[in-house]
Image 1 (cartoon, helix red, strand yellow):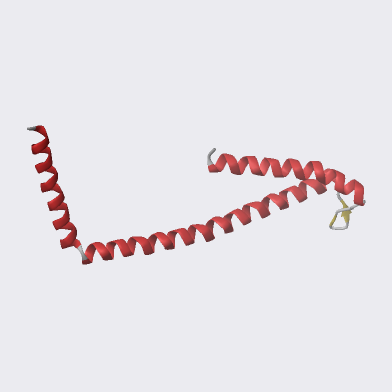
Image 2 (cartoon, one colour):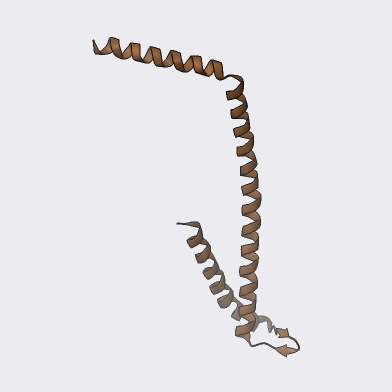
Length: 114
């Protein structure tokens, strides 16, 4: 499943679960939500709670992806730098090894076919 499809399904599930469980919690605990000294209806209160939860989920996802993405990028940079350093230092040895491998490979093919 693609990342965007998974994210969309997670947001829809969050909204649905917040709506379903939000109505029960508001009824059980007799919670009243006020905005500018005005009592909000339960559906509006649940809607605000759901939107708040979705914003928190997206913010957490962005933080997690940026932190782990940065760590992975730094590890790849270090690995690539080390690989380029080794290749830069030992390129004559690598070149000679490739030449020997090519010569020995073509010599083996000639002996096996004859």
